[in-house]
Length: 303
Image 1 (tube, rainbow, N blue to C red):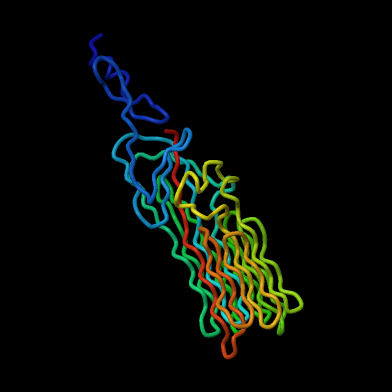
Image 2 (spheres, rainbow, N blue to C red; image 1 turned 180 degrees about the vertical axis):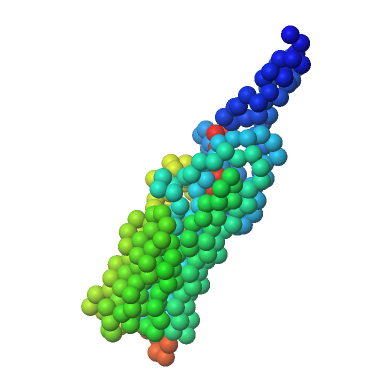
């Protein structure tokens, strides 16, 4: 049989991680050639593409099974006895979802939720998404409430401001509701995190934010030593802490913003998908809420 006849008979044979072509008397694999992301690193047996801004995963040749992690942005906190911002969702019960990719994929990173001002609530974090063979979407965290306004729902819900409104509810994977205030004289509730609800305020003590998910629990290679994108981070998707009046403010989950009391603006989140800290009482309409942190997308595959 001629090599052309053999090639014809073998056309269409599936390979899990490559496409075959005829080369020099035999079949070889078309390499999987990919670019994209704010940071590309090969760690251990995996190649990683880390996206912290919206962009495209560009595939110029080959086909391969890839793991995809999508994290929504954190919500902003409320001003004036403000509730903490909720954490963005980490989509997928096992964090990574697998898709076989062979063409360009659009990556959208959710924008951070802004803290409330002049007695306003925080804005919700934006949704992040990865459009491959199907679209994976992770909801942004809910905005924290203020003394006047209710919090918003999201991935994890925002915490309630001083007024005692209902807490923000959760939707999506690895998400929890925000905490409540309980009424006048108490601080704001904490925003929900990826592993715990936001805590309720009690006796003029604000509620702390729900804890997020430790990066190395998701993937042992996700450390600041391996990726500059994670500098200063050990946890993602934590809820922000609640603000207070004359009592005690509350800390956020690891990497989220802490609430403040009396005069200050709430703390900004520093880890991906985490919520801002609630603003305190500052006379008039009080201190502003802290900002959340933007979302994240990771694509990895065997190198």
